[in-house]
Image (tube, rainbow, N blue to C red; front, side, top):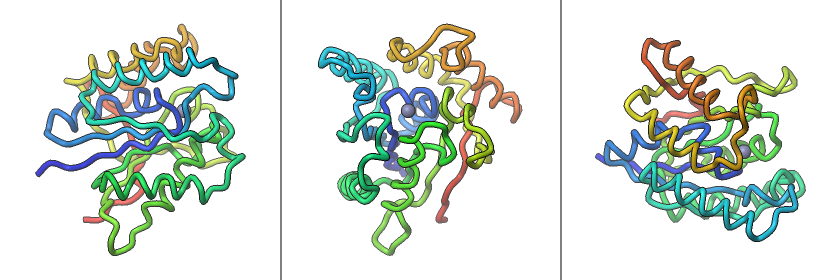
Length: 222
Ligand SMILES: [Zn+2]
């Protein structure tokens, strides 16, 4: 039976870095995937309307590459989500959960260096707290290069316990990453396409497959 999957991320490109191969795999198996981004990913850099439009176009290209059903943006301030009340973020996500009714949610690791990422996870966990009417059964945290691995021991480290074999979907992940060429950097920067593929290879080889994406299981109701 097909499932409904919701990605709640702070910025468009986080889905490409964190779980593109897994999303392509969901789509291939008949699941319906929705993307929800809490910021426009531009604001803190004083981006122009053209920058914002380019980011939406990149998101569209990535979404099409992965075959997702929809993508949507909230309007919280990029890299300043700590300037708005957490309750506002929670309500915004609750509203999305009510309309999409996801079975599975993918979101950020709560120990990321990026403050938007940390707050996103906190708000997701609050918005999807397991009450009788909440259909969310599985919540996973993904890793985002240039944030997850850049944190120090001030926050909990990313210790994955779920690995998704994305070997047949590595080209889809590369395609999704390529859509965000403005956000990607040249090697040896951590957030290069090459290093993201390297990470997938490392995660895959860790569990004996060619490529994988790794997650921390946050909740699983069976
Ligand atoms: Zn991000």
